[in-house]
Length: 581
Image (tube, rainbow, N blue to C red; front, side, top):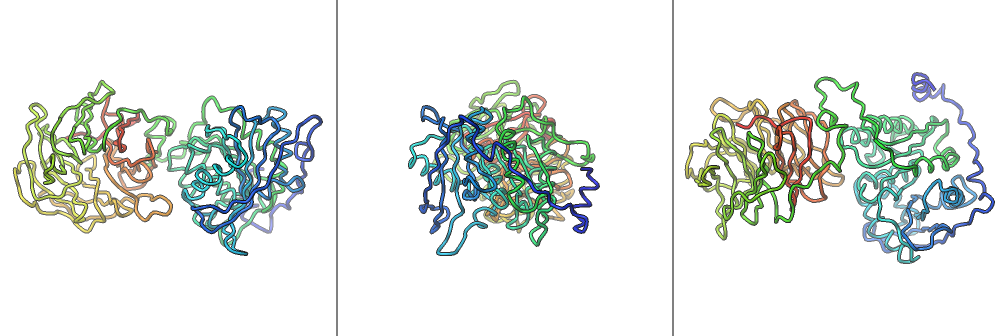
């Protein structure tokens, strides 16, 4: 169908195509001769801590070919009762039996689970299925699947590429949400008439997909041009938005738009082919992200990472630390960071990949930056048993340490080419300024306040502006820097994305690249913004722990280094760090 005609059909109900009748094919109607029948058993589950006081029915399908000698692939169906029957629209056990026997999908155990019921008539379906975030994933991974595996003495594979999810309507967006939140557990999604609309905020997914590093998931979308158009949104348009966003980021996906309505008829008819596509071998290479419509100022992830990047691009630099922080690069590309509780500073030489202890037995450092004099300035959290916090300066040649400012509560800092140190006082909600020439200056004066737990701090590439992240809020502030070093014109110019269910972004350490982009660590990962404050994308965290600071260093100063709790990682970019003073 031509795009213009399709758009007209979707937007002009009077011209809508009459839904055709879809009929099941041979792989759905009956088992082929000689195909063994898998076993289906029903169970009840009422022990959820994630969704307390809920009860639900479930079923397990175990293929005849499964003998327990090795773990089976897994596919979880939401609204399981609508999939497990052999006389309905889906008839999954028959389809599984036929496809497994023909080798068109792996030996796969199916788990079919209904939404929870609270009380006699209280369905928990919308809350469980339409809500964003990781709650339902936690329910599946930590509660339901261990229960099923133990009850039926089966083994599910741990390989996320052999674990799939399926659902229709709200069950479909639920399936996608689980894979989106936990691609380490599930990497295949079959969505039928998916509710990617504003029932509980799911309409954000297309924009999230476009501005989040491509995740290692495969997605099959099905919808019909006569699907719903109601107060929550337009289902056909929403699914087209999803398909367009997946294409933009170079996902392995398929979208089939028929003429059906909000039912499982079309999805059931094409279920065998959907499963063949979903379980086909991995692609030799993923599609390229779409870049042709990005304008000159559009800072998409494809501009800074080859092919838009992927989470597996992170390279481990070092591990086994107490808590890493203070990511910092010098003008030559050498990288420095601190192991804060152990009072150590490490250095990774520009041509090397492994850290070497550079300063031992010094203060506990939470922030490090080089100044225009070539010296290293630091925000400290005390030394040994002395918890007195200071701003200090370290001579790289001699390792001699001098105190710049006392009676301070510094978190992170930045040093300008004009000779000003700016540091965040998180508890006071302030930014404090002190000249690099100061020594033992008590209680330097704040230059900005009223910030919700200020944490990370950076300069614009031209050093005319100062940017400060809010750990307790959802913004980063930008300030103009006056000739006297003072700050003025503060604006909440950058808006950070927050995880579902959280009210704060966890904005933490940050850095700037040569093109003026700001890179801010947060709960969700490293959030990248263009020079005007528009988000360009979110880069995944290397591991599921706090990512607290980042810096450009390495050859060409083109590697993004991050301090990620007990480890340090780096990855190659297509940009380079802003000039070090």
